[in-house]
Image 1 (cartoon, helix red, strand yellow):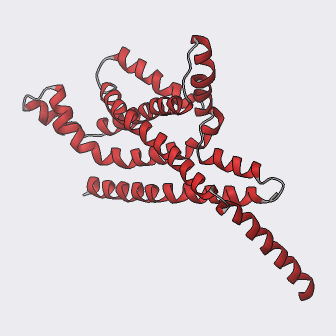
Image 2: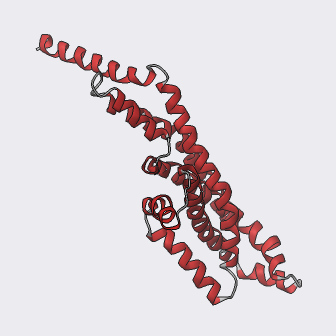
Length: 243
């Protein structure tokens, strides 16, 4: 029995080594890291655009204007109902064809993700702002504060601890969703992985398992610390609120 298992184990180890070696053949490793950097850069730019816009929209949603609140609510629900893939396809394939314009994949990705982020951030900000206790707001009004002063000196300082963890969680979602970028011709880490697998299809037919496993590891290395940071900040925010 040992004599029959040993050759199979050696064959499996040899296959695993050959598959994993593909990642470090030539410039494949550097290309994968470059693709990861593209994904992170697009996610970062989308967050830079979407967070300030979302904060403004979230603050506007707390105003007692029913028309404005309905319009912004529809804006949020559009991005929640439509899959991100559909948004990317609309922005990259359909709208440019309709208006006869050419837009690069990375630009479309940054704009589409940025609008998505702004919609999600607006809901995070609105929820955090309205969670501020009424007696603190009433105290600010009693001191003669205007609506803008109440937002700046009362609502925002009280709610910022709730916004940060949710925003970090959203950042991890954006980074993971960049895996869809290969569908709009962006050379991200998944696209590079597919190119490597295609070029090694004949010599290493089992390379897909190792390449995708390595991509999973790269996403994990980036997203796991952010997830733990969000959990830690959320725990501290709850302690402060309970204290």
